[in-house]
Image (tube, rainbow, N blue to C red):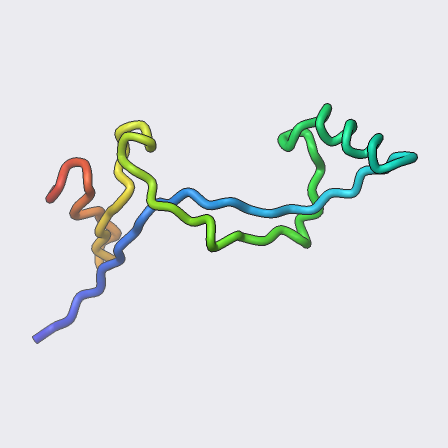
Length: 89
């Protein structure tokens, strides 16, 4: 009997922790600069980015815009054969 390999792929939400240095004359000034910039405008030190595994949560199909969050993929032909939206393909 042959054996065939499949992968089960699951999408989650997770937090990353990155570190930034902000130059300022005081802590209060640094805090104000950070608040004014916001996270998306920060230049992070990618050498010190960590995944916070304790923050991992399942992502629902609804929260993923109606797209699958669980799939089974046949590795023999790289085809998705099942997902949690449409079921068997």
